[in-house]
Length: 159
Picture 1 (cartoon, rainbow, N blue to C red):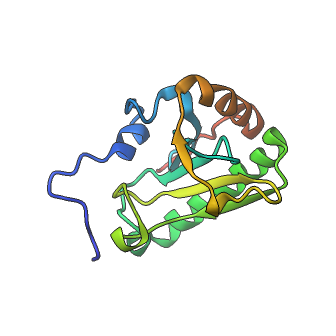
Picture 2 (cartoon, rainbow, N blue to C red; picture 1 turned 135 degrees about the horizontal axis):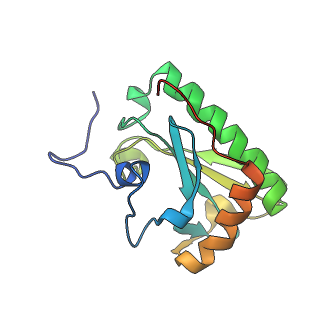
């Protein structure tokens, strides 16, 4: 249903979920959360006034929102809430935005459901600003602060 991944698609987010690195986009040091159901990492792509944004994915591959089941949705939003609270504390931001895209018409670029979690500040112009790719060295302090604030990854049985 509404699938756009080409045959044989090698999902870059699946690599991260499996604990593999996906240079130049994602390295092990970028990962800030794993709970057996979801995985989150600092996004390589940063918008001008919103450094340290996170990508959050379900560990079980689904291409888009249409394929997301109730359990995955609940697990994702539980993790998004945890990440958002940690961002507020770790970054000192004054708000959080989430964003998610489905299909080419909505600018989905990776064929694995993912939720963007952005730190926000009043007047930051997130939706009007440009983005750039960062280095692992730029991302590392943000990842470390989030990991420390989020706390240890829980062990989940049966997932």
